[in-house]
Image (cartoon, rainbow, N blue to C red; front, side, top):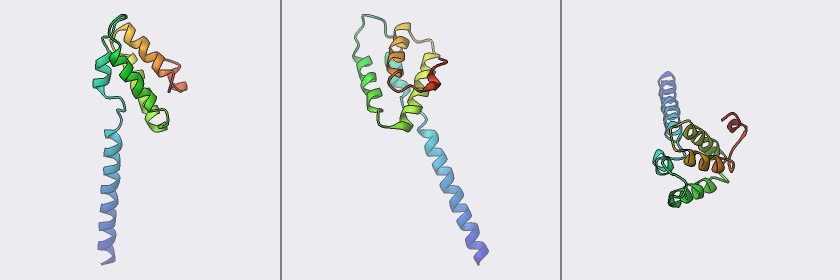
Length: 106
């Protein structure tokens, strides 16, 4: 009887850990691809509405340490894409708000 309860408890623990891992994987993107797509073709002189929205979003991360770290990774990934120079320059300016030493090489 005790052995059966132990096995059930172990199964429950494995399920809970699995759910936590799945949840963490699902939150790896703090900045959605759609948000980056909205600014990726920006050129100097165009409407800056989408850039302003992006900037406000980055500002909203100010007090969320975990989110800032993931957002920084998202932004560094964006800088490695074929986005326009103007959009990359803008993201670099936004990155300075949340950047850590991980941003230095990029």
